Length: 55
Image 1 (spheres, one colour):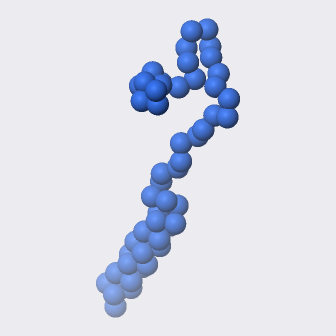
Image 2: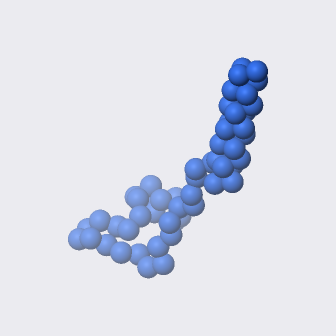
């Protein structure tokens, strides 16, 4: 009986964990976008590889 109860609790915990992770978007969040480019001395606001890709 204890084994059945333990398996039921483990199954419930795993199911709730999977449900919580999938509702959260698998931990991925969208990239933050800047509305205005910024610069710090000679450093651009985006990576050089991104700048080359959009030209």
